[in-house]
Image (cartoon, rainbow, N blue to C red; front, top):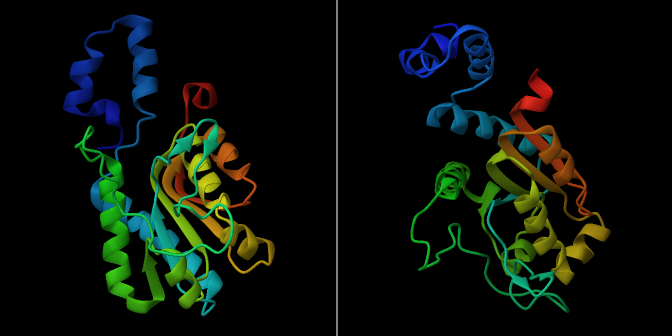
Length: 217
């Protein structure tokens, strides 16, 4: 099938329109990209391998799934608790945050499972949500924040701020001991620009772009 508008489900939706409206609706729906779980996994995995190839033996990659961060008034809290000042110590965050008031797991569950599987396949070459103790002990290379999709980019920007709030991370970054990457299957142009505006200067990699109403027509 060459176009999404030719599928049965799309045809049923397009039957709601007529004339010029149907032509416009067809143009819109043909910009939709359907991505299977396998395609998403293989696409993001290729980006992991690209980062690994760029950094060679400069230390294992440290992966973190995109997540909401905590705030104190108008300030993002460090991703490692109590690490705003002094030497950061302790374990890393859980791959999937647990909130008893929001028991459902969204796309972060898929990304966390992808990271776990990739780390298991590559053993000591990869780190799964490590804390500062493990980052320091293993002399980790790039920190890689992983998402399925970057919309506004605000949540990843805030997560990068949570890393920057860690005094030890700021020190490692200033001495060029670590780099930051953000990996996603797709993202809007606006969202990618917002993530790139982070003071950690992350390299942002995506498998494919994401047209919007403003950019596609």
